[in-house]
Length: 290
Image 1 (cartoon, rainbow, N blue to C red):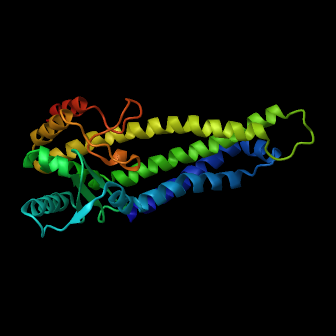
Image 2: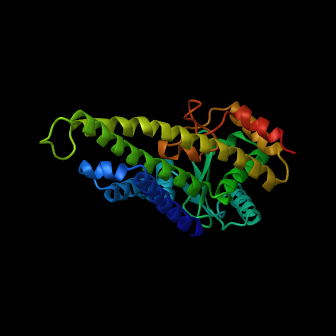
């Protein structure tokens, strides 16, 4: 709950800073002269940016269960299921977080953690991961996912995405009004935004959205390094995580649904937009640690 409160306070702070900077630069006077209220724009940017991000965070667990076909287990089934649940419990206790829900989903090797709260999260592993790895390697992957939860990565990723969304919404509309004003500077009878505003806003929403995605993906890659290190710390040694990554590097990790791509143990296409670093870089980072 503390992280959610911090998330909301940070979001408000970002909007306030945007408002102050806009006022200092005279953007508010320009917008008012062209029929747009700065406060209304900031409110719209806040709702569109952070509202969507927080809703996505709050529904992340049920959406993940549904989209990946996760079957929740409690350890009362097979011996393997009991071992998975106890492994998650062991790492959760060591990391100082509440026991997450545990699930299995069908598909090639992969795993993910999600949830809005540290003490009410979900850890899920695929059937391909369980069948294609040794127990020690699966244990390392589970440690990696528990480390994500302990690090608060789900909330932090939502915060970064929310900040980026707000900047995209705000900047695209301010620039849209500037372009529209320039195009219609000799039209004294004009009122309200024209076609220049709408075209510019749509184009910038797409272009700035791509830039925002690059920043979010970069941060996601950094958190993967931290989760790898966290798994090594939870296990007390780094070799199992190195072995698990090497195994993934020679496998074909399952593609998770797009809304969950950043949550998996491996995945991502394209260097700039990849949510995960290359396997060899992750192994090298672990090997370089004492």
